[in-house]
Amino acid sequence: MSIALSLVEQLQRLAAEHQAVRITEVEVRCGVLRQVAPAALELAFTAATAETVAAGANLKVIEEGLVARCRACGTEFATEIDDYSCPTCQQADVEFVAGHDIVLTAVVCETPDR
Ligand SMILES: [Zn+2]
Image (cartoon, rainbow, N blue to C red):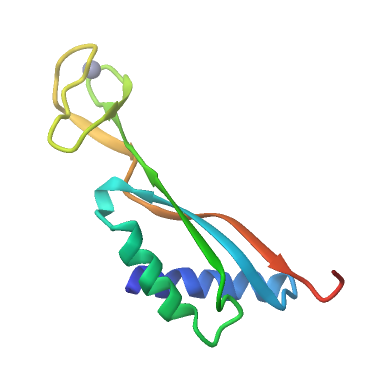
């Protein structure tokens, strides 16, 4: 729910910047590490956007896979939770470069000019 609220905050800021009267489509990329169920996020989003400029907007959730970078050799590789071994050097000392964020990737809005 707090994720949905922070999305709404970002949307309201965007709408104000662009003088948008209505936001019709929102796309977010959702990292697997956040373990957010897209359906749950959609529900929370619908509730959080009620009475806002984004009410009724169509939310598209793109699930983002996990990408790790090996601290030993620098290899970046797509991985799964619980399997962090580097394919190049087999070490499991990694940091995650993708998969832990929820990012607003696209917004479609209507402005009074249209
Ligand atoms: Zn490595």
